Length: 349
Image 1 (cartoon, rainbow, N blue to C red):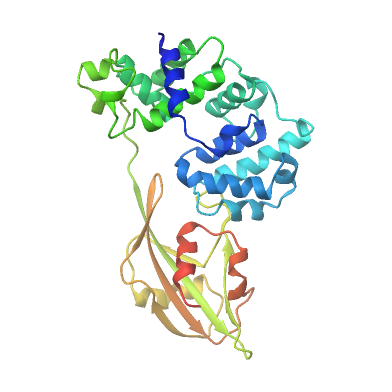
Image 2: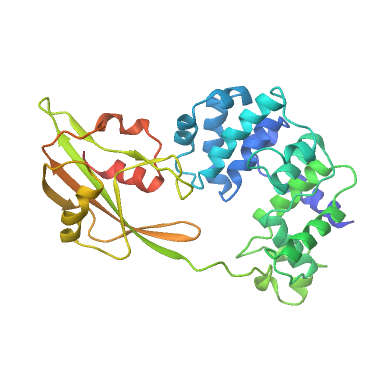
């Protein structure tokens, strides 16, 4: 039995029941693939279901406001995926008359769609002969064939793609591609692979050479950047006892583009109350602050892929009406980073 046939046999017996496994609708396959980039399946399922309910077709997603899309995406992280998702939906409607492209060549022109996603859609929806290579596939192939070339090097990316292409099943490409990814997700796992029951264990080079824990090889990431975020939470109470605060939309190409946040004072190190008292007026347009309170004594550390945010929240109570103030009852209408969403759940406005 060939490598691909063994994978197919394993997949028939072990595949998980997932909501996108019951369809070959390219819109839904595309949604699931974008969501599962850098996201665990268990975390992605409820988001997938929410998006399908809110936007049943690509027309619905295309017509949505970006704010709606970002709000539904809130908590998944890597928000550029949501913005690209929205932009790609508009491309499908405007450039392909609402019909998802059927070829790899056209699929890869969509915003946010790279080789992996185009290959996944083409093979799953149309059984086209394009191999998928994600983190799971890299791991399976590196271990089985004993490949020590770094998977994130230029030569490694090219080599593994060519190898994966050679291993494609001749006819059942759809299930084979899903099978090899599933195999890496639940059998040949990163930390505790179940080698004893593995159908490939009689010919796995990593197992034979006792290198399972060493493969795949990956070039180390760049150094993690440390940033210090001081969020200022202005609170103003009017004559009707209504409470107001302030949110601003992030612009530019940094993290959390187009999401909303409280006024931010970023520093190059930890700062105390004296510095906040001196500098808050630079970011909050009010002179009526009469009390400043630190909400969290210890940093809340929010970890992103290349940076860690050491965050403190400072509450500014004042008497001046806030310019562009937002009633605290309306805060749930704004798409915010999960760091702020968690704060808003616990803070008593």
